[in-house]
Length: 120
Image 1 (cartoon, rainbow, N blue to C red):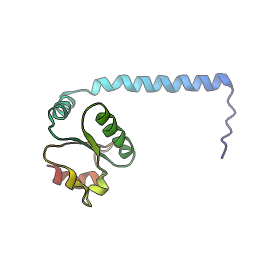
Image 2: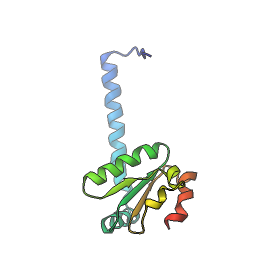
Image 3: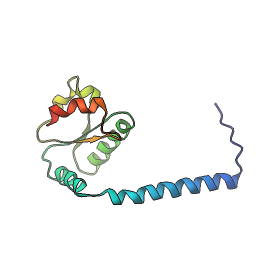
């Protein structure tokens, strides 16, 4: 399928510049969200004697393996566990020495909520 946008070169450049500006503004706002909870999470990861286990569902589930891979390649032993698979046996690979990072947009994803009791 070919998308046929009737945009000329200045329009394309204008849209691209606007998108980059919007994304840059969003990134700059992240700094305002760094708080004591963020610091606590970082401290937990730094003090972890096991692995960082990352889990997420949906779009967050697409980002979560990348987080685990990046952390692993920068020296923090990490692994992605899909929450749907965790409820069918994969949570057995999570040990008490591990720290679990759950990535969620809503905080209400059923598959993630279901694995919480076993992680506490």
